[in-house]
Length: 131
Image (cartoon, rainbow, N blue to C red; front, side, top):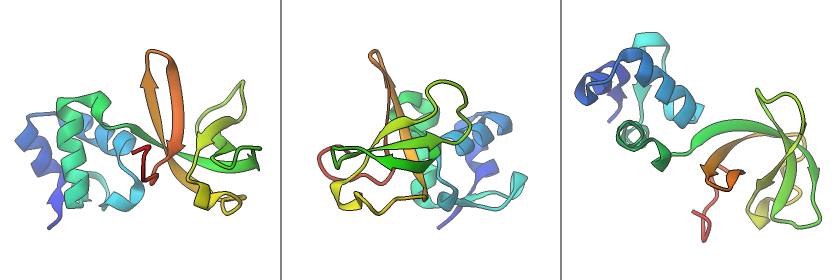
């Protein structure tokens, strides 16, 4: 059953603006519907927001990228991340091998994972040993 974002914000004791920011940075657009205070979340999205409110690094940020070119290694591609400007223009993205050659020119969600060594990017729906 879907959950209203305003009700979830009240339950978690967080401000509406903070809940909206979590929705924009931690969720894919397919996980919520509506606009403004009439935003509804899927059950999985509500769980992600609850976890992100308690432990922000536990839920990676969701960004969108567009394929630029393939790499020699079929597990990696070069892509331009929306909203990023400057140098470098493209970034390495880890993808499942089954998608090699199938993302040309397409827009897809990615996760930005930041640790002490830096930020790495991976395909958001990556399953298997990397998840």
